[in-house]
Image (tube, rainbow, N blue to C red; front, side, top):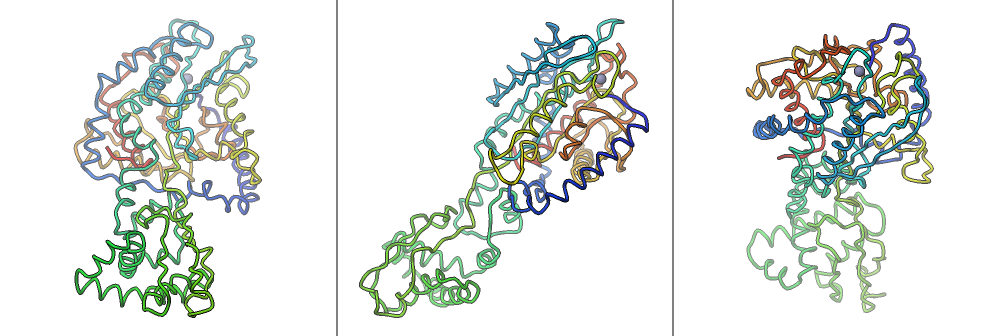
Length: 512
Ligand SMILES: [Zn+2]
């Protein structure tokens, strides 16, 4: 990483302007892509005090943290044994936690000849469309004066990521089953009260709730209709038994069910609406009984494929209620209960310059990976020009972490909200006395002209939302031989771990 001059700042602004233009041109196209848009409406879960307490407990295991850090505290210049040992440590740890791990090797020319670099990309659930990306670099800078360890640059950031994956292993594994605990419990109930909270969760999981149906779901009528009609249709005998159980149920069924169907008729103009309405009247005795049987219970929220049964031939041409087309009655509001979001770690190779920092002598790994992903359409052969980089909800880059008395700032307006979330977790954890002292590392200010060059740049240039967690000013040990074990301040590292755990759990909507 490098702090460049104002010339670099001007360069960054040029890129920003170009991106605005490109982004605008494609906006209409992209607006049709639900998974792409989901990142723009994503919100954190919101964590209770109890959850923050539990996450802090998991994060505060410094014994585990040190065990993961120690193998990283060696010189690891590209092409050396230390470098490949460290890569093996990263790969083994992540594979041991059952993540999908890719080692993406490539050759590049450097001022000291051709070198082979290997980015390590670990993904919790590779099948999930969207990713929260957390990244660092694992190579260390060449220093002819002696052994440069790069404790903050970036051994500690890499260890923080390994620690996060290890300490939250069971929670993340549950998440990778694609049904968040909260959402699952909500979906499993029969009440179908779509609370505001659940509604937002449904949206964030790309679950479409038609506006019309949503409003209907909020009515009391649905409960009655579901209990009386759908449940009864599924289990006719059981339904009839319940029907006779009490006055409330009967009143509800007769009055509100009628109201519900009338309401549907008023709002849904297509002919499919008339079929359920017909069933209502059929129950009034105007029509030969031919109980329709949905293939799935409503509670499973899997009605996208529900088709109505064949109409009883006896009905044809007789009662008005039967003169309906029953073939295409479909609920389409829950096509996919599975979560669409996962966690991805990128351990970049070749961040450091071999001679002197320049556009060609630095960021070897991130430049290669950003270009590679940009050239990979996602989904394959799509017509919307979306590619692998679009799968990145947010790219969180960790660098130069581990010393005490650090200050972070919001660097990018489009991720201001996520920076604010980090800040708020620091404040809340502090108020709950879950941090070592009250550090206030996250400054409530934006710095937009820093000119900081780091692994985020190739992604920033390609429009990926960036949250850069790097102290300003840089630690005093930066690029000095003193960036070693003695520079580290474990209470600060512990604080950062707790905040990162909270941020990640909040973003992925997981709870311990
Ligand atoms: Zn560095």
